[in-house]
Amino acid sequence: MSGRESDLIQHPFLHFSDVGKSFSTPKGPQVVVEGFELRVAKGEFITIIGHSGCGKSTILMITAGLNHLTSGGIFLENKMITEPAPDRGVVFQSPSLFPWMTALENVMLGVRQVFPHGSKAQRRDICRYYLDKVGLAGALDRRAGDMSAGMKQRVSIARAFALKPKLLLLDEPFGMLDSLTRAELQEVLLEVWSTERITALMITHDVDEAIFLSDRVVMMTSGPRARVGDILPVRFPRPRARAGVMEHPDYYRHRGHLIDFLEGHHLKPATRDARIAAPQASVMTAV
Amino acid sequence: MKDKLISTLSFAGFGWCVPVIRLTTGEDPNEQIRQIFLTIGVPVLTFGLFLLLWNGAASGVRTNLGTVPGPAQVVEQIRSLAQEHREERQKRTEFYARQAEKNKAQLAANPTEAVKVRKFTGRPTYLDQIFTSLRTVFTGFLIASLIAVPLGILCGMSKTLMTALNPLIQIFKPVSPVAWLPIVTMIVSAVYVVPREWMPKSYVISSITVALCCMWPSLINTAIGVKSIDKDYINVGRVLRLGFFSRVFRIVLPVSMPYIFAGLRISLGVGWVVLIASEMLSQNPGLGKFVWDEFQNGSSQSLARIMVAAFTIGLVGFVLDRIMIMLHQLVSYGQETH
View 1 (cartoon, rainbow over the protein chains, first blue to last red):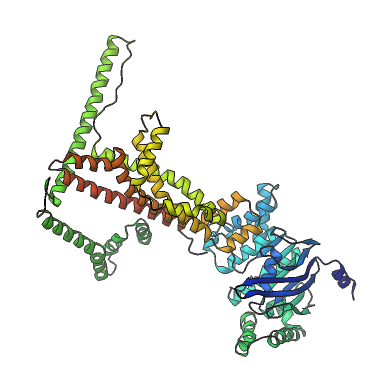
View 2: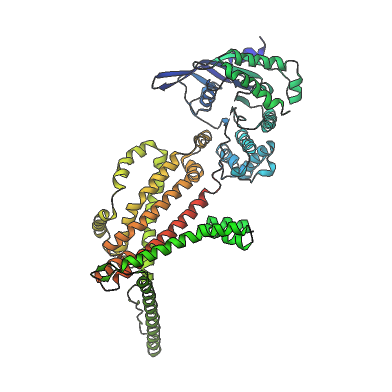
């Protein structure tokens, strides 16, 4: 066991301790997640992969503080998470920008909360810096309502980073984008992330996306009573380029590992082929 | 240029003249003529038909005040009302001219003399009455909006408050102005003992009655609008830890603007309908009082004059509604694309 790994066990930056979530339904309580256990080191990029409805989004929303757990606890730097706070930046699946505000104003909304003592110019600089990073330097004053889905999600990424959070939470951020835009935005995300190294937790159901971005891929079993089924460490060197990653001898082994897990667990035969074909069609052709 | 004009016209509610513009620029004449017939020709034809039917039916009914007037008599009364208005204005100008001259002469004779400036006390003309009605309805509407919108926002944000207020809203919503009026009259008379000249009691009473009747649609619509805000927006607000006022002014208000204005539009419509009744009973010198006075007056022209008032009420209501639709479009512009 390396020093880093033992440190992770004793002092995790983010610790999911026996997390459980159940909803009450007319037919009695339904347990969505049970015994979810995960330790994340500072600066790690973790993706959580699993089938729709397995509760992975629920885990993320609880981490964001937007939902409550029913048992266990999530600890960020040893402090239990109970409510939302700007130390956790969230990128939602839909960009959820305010359409009547410009890109800059959307980012500013959060920055104003986090840096209340900074001068107006300083805050503006922060917003500009991150909008520039996501490739929107020329669209600062464009209204969000007039932007394409891809541009909106770029703003949304900038908004999350501009808070300088301890933890970045991404809930299938590219799920609603076309494959070309998705590949582009994965690279934008990776680039911003590699300069900031903010611990990131991302939900996805795209196998290639998970391998390309993360240090570890966490596979969740299908619900009810979903938990961590398996964890795949991805040790490709950073900074990563897509071509380099895909040519790596381990790439297809990793891919096979993930697909085997998803296939082996609880996949209905009818949807299986579509599941496996989908990521191929999305990212592979885009490169 | 042409497209801009067309979109502006459609925005302002003049969509019906778009084919005319297209025709003048020579765009597919046959289609445009067909469109002109459909958008302008058909309504004009129905209106003509209505006038014919009215004319035919009216002469057959005899009342205490003579036969029911047809369109011709109504037009005649419009002219006569306009004439009265001009005469009254003429009298007023003459009055002030005489007064100024008299005062000048007095001052010339004795510079220390305290000259009196009296206001002209002629009776209000039809146009004055329309403006009194408009002033009253807007006062009532303003009072209603100032109460309904903030309250609606709070109701939309807090389920508890909504549950608390719901019974009151449901009970008071259907109460007619005629029922409110005596209550309002008694309370205003007790509280507002010394009326100011620019704010007579009848005006206060009518405005408050209008406000009481027309605040409900705005209140309910605002609450629904606030309640139906996309959960993502609320979540963003929570993640950013926006304070209460930040949430209200940066998220809640802009998102629910279209709902609020849809509510305000209904409110103004209701207010205008209600106003006539409350003016009649409170003797506020607007269109309602005009109708009542003519009814009491019972001259041979009275019925025709009341019909002029009916048309005026309808037309003003229509214009008010158009204005509110425009405002509604203005605030919801570009919000379809989230």
